[in-house]
Image: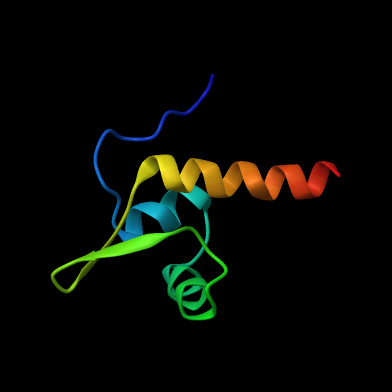
Length: 65
């Protein structure tokens, strides 16, 4: 069964839950510019599900090479 991403912008907690990593990892990736692209809505950090999927796929391509 394939897991689908929600049709809404994701919070850092959503991303951490989906990837199975601690929330602090999401913030560390953001500080280091190594994680998925995020954007601010006011003071709230959000992630586009399409950007998250593209980032994960890019990691999979690197691992497959």
